[in-house]
Image (cartoon, rainbow, N blue to C red; front, side):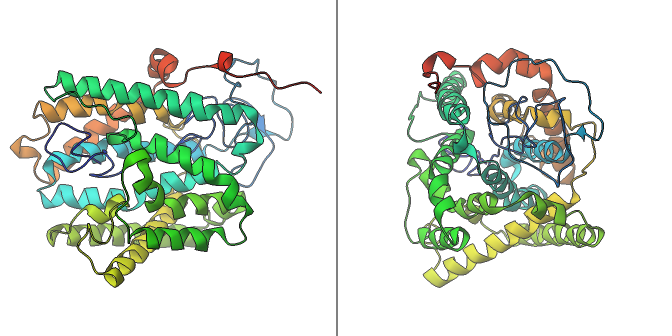
Length: 410
């Protein structure tokens, strides 16, 4: 998840996602109503509210103005709190973001490279699947539509300028290209365009096959990173798959035998990642953006690689969804504020890279992977705390109600 252009360190290309994707969503990873706002509930209720029992997940709240504190109604008989499943998924995924970015300086070590490959095969794809799922009814609400500016464009510009200033302060030359997102900011633009394309996919008879065909044929072209178009096409099938998913599909994963199989899938994936790392596998394919030419592959090898990567990523995504706890955990509440971890973790990570703290010799090995992972996990917890949101909400979740016309009353 690092990019030469995005990070001052001597790491690969532009986005932290390029040295590995960054992840990140709405009630489930990535912005549903307000990126991953605390006030947005994919189950259709705000935190603390109660909902009638449902399969697994319902649509997100219709209003982006639901951030105002509302008195909580007393619990009604026969009703229960929202299922914490999605918040658990969100936090686990977002914790992997700073871990992946921080492993970049030590990728010369097989252990770090194996962990990196393992994370990035499924991490961004699962974020995108969830984002697609939460976008199914995005255009059914004026308030949600307003979020295209509030939660994507405004934070995008602020973060882009902020990271450019940070890189300059760390000794790099000032560089700011709004149309070419640097480092972790690529996801905001990619998600914006995925959301804009939602009505088209919803009108198609066979959206998933069409999206997969576009994904495969996009590999024949060297697509520019401007406006995140390379990632838009590279991860498109996952977004469209999310659009067609229904709550009952998630419930199907909550079976013991599926959980057992999922455990073996993840163990097998870890073994393959270790093997690939020892073989010196290149990281380009795991960024879901490079053309077959960029990867030095023939057209048929390129197609085979993309198909194989798609299958492996989907298998790991399903396995993760099956294994994540469905009950409330100590980190469930943290999963309601993942936006802050996603957009803010780059500050300490960038500083640590530039100061050489992530390149000390003893970090090049299994012990280093554990140390980096534990530190970044603690960082994710801190950045998802309510206090962090209180401090940065005005920047990352601005309320621009003055910008929009009030809907006419009939």
